[in-house]
Every structure is written in C-alpha cells, then in structure tokens.
Amino acid sequence: MKYVLKFWLACIVWLACIAGGAITSFPSSAYAAEDESRLAAFMRGIEFSGFVDTYYSYRYSRPDKVETGSENQFLNLRAWDRRHNSFALSNIQLSVFKPSTEESPIGFGFVTHFGDIANQVMNPDTNEFGDEISDKFAIQQGFVTYKAPIGNGLDFKVGRFATWIGSELIETVDNPNYSRGLLFTNAIPYTHTGIAISYPLLDTLTTSAFFVNSWDGQDQDNNSAKSFGYQFHWAFGQNTDVVFNGIHGAEREDSSKDLRHLWDIVVAHRVMEGTKLILNGIFGTEAGGGATGGVGKWWGFSGILSQDITDAFGLALRGEYFDDGDGAMTGVATGAGIEDSLGALVGTREKGLRVWGATLTANIKIRENLLVRPEVRYDEANQGAFRGHRSDLSTAMSFAYLF
Image (cartoon, rainbow, N blue to C red; front, side, top):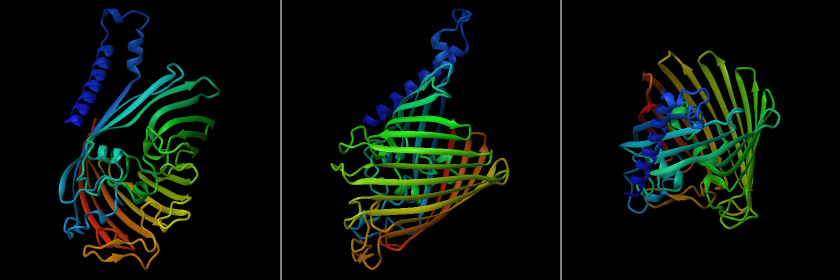
C-alpha cells in the first residue's frame, strides 16, 4: 500500500506540473505584460515525457519446473524482463527535465518508475522472477544542473543520475532491442549518486568527470571511499560517434582498499540511411573480487545491427558474449559451481561462467505513440546457469505507449 501511495503522489505532482505548464501557455491579462513572469518563463522550459511498458514472455527452458530447493540457482543473467509465462507491467515511467541553458543556467531532472523495473532498480539482487516484490515505486534519477559561464559552458549535475557506462539504457523504448543485453545486466552499474562535470573541449569532443558514492546509486556509500569516472565523446562527422568510459574506486562492502576498475568503449555508426551499427566492449577488474579470491576479471562485447525497413517497421539483431571467468560479477568460478535441478554440482570442470546470446527484435509502430515489439532470444552458457539448463530460449511481446 505504501508504494501505491508514493506512486499516486508522484502522479499528482507530475500532473500539477503539466497543469501549470498549460496555464502559463494560455496567459491571462495579468501575464500579457511585456515582461513575462519568472514562473511563466520557468515553466516554458520544462520537458515532460513518459511511457507505459507491458509485456508477455515465455521461457522454453521452463524455469518454473524445478525440484524444490533449487529455486535460487537461476542466475540473474537478464535484467527486468524476467517473468515466465506471464503478462507483466514492466514500467510506467514519468520524466520531467528542465535543461540548463545560457539564458536559464539552473535546471533539474527527475525520472520515476512504477512496476517490476522499480523493484529491480532498488533491489538488483531480487530473485530471477521478481517473486519477492518489495518496491513497486522508485526514483531512478533526481538531480540539479547548472551551466557555469566559463568558456563554452561548464555543466554541473548533482544528485542521482543514470550511468554513463555501456551502450544500452534503462528505458527499453530507447534501445534497439526490447530485452537488455548480458553486458548491461552483468558487467556495468545502473545509476550513481554524486556529481558530474562536463565541458566541450572541441566542437567534436566533449569530456566529463564523475565523483560518485559507488555503483547502483546508493545514497549512503557502502565504504569510506568514493569512485571516480570519466567519459570522452568524439563525434566524427554526422555518422560516427566514439565514446570511451571508465570508472575506478572501491565498491566492496566496508572495504576501501580493494579497487574495482571498469573500462568501456562504444562505437555507433550509421552505415547508410536507416541502418545503424552499435559496437560495445567492456573490461573490468577488482582486487579480491574473484569468487575464489585474488583479482577478479570480467569482459565482454556486443554488436547491435538495426535496420529500418519502412517508417513503421524495423528489425534489430544483437549478438553478445560475456566472460566472468573469476566469478567477479556472478559469483560462479572454478570449483564454485551451481546446482542443477537434481541437486548435482555442475560447472566444476570449467573455469568460471561464459555466456553468449543472440536476440532478434521487430519494432512496429502501430500508431505514432504505440510501439509493439515481438522478440526471440537465445542464451547459452558453459554451465547449467539456467536452473540446471545450459541454454535458455525465450520469446516476448511488448506493448508500449509513449507520451
């Protein structure tokens, strides 16, 4: 009941903002003066958006048919679209942004979730099928921005914001594929709480620095150290963008000495009109992060090729590979193993967990704001990571309304 009240309170505030914007867009005689009121000027710069995302999915590995006692052996290798043979409300998202400009240098932004995604954003380790729902409402982002009049404009952002790492976003409607990839789920953080500073060094190069508590947006750091990150974004003409990211810091509970390092590169290239290729490579290490001790390492890569067939129909094909040989991200390493559906230990003969996958998604615009996305996905691991199965075939159908 508590999260329902939170959600409706957010809706009331959001709708009040819309109403305020509508009022200021039709000024009365009091607002017809030559000098507009500060409130009217403020409201005119606010951007409202959101979407409702629902889906049905079926997983042919039948993860619901397992022996008692092995329920928790299904690793969380996929983000959020986790339900089997079920209709689900994935996300109702409301977003409000006021960008910082030279004329209005102070801005803000906040993004809210209601649905299964809210629970996973707040509790990333929740069981695979979301059976233990504790949060239905979450604030993904909430920050204040300021554009300082220095050179071409020095931008500050303070608060909670989405990660700058990786090639996919939390908002599935902004991704070529419906389900998020293996790298998004297992190799990178989702959100951060701290400060971001950005500056355009050149017309084609923007740099950013980040000082944050830790991974995944904790308002209270889990140790006494902070993490440092950076981004270099190059734009080569109108068709190619190259982004190099990094984050470094202690992320282990109550340990400020065991450093975690993550490097990430993204290349986005428009091959031709309607055809886009996105490549992403990731490599990370953490002292003491291996499941069996020592330095843990993980790495992976993905490629997404999207093609617009018509204005209302397109296809997106993703191929990916994730290697967590030391169990740094999944906790599965040599000798650690996981149990299959009969309780037998598997994975002791091979080092760590390696997973590859392929996903094909159709993007269909029924109307301007209605997006329908059928998808088929196949994942395969070198161990019985899917509750005793080495592979997992799934299909899904998503319906999203954007506003």
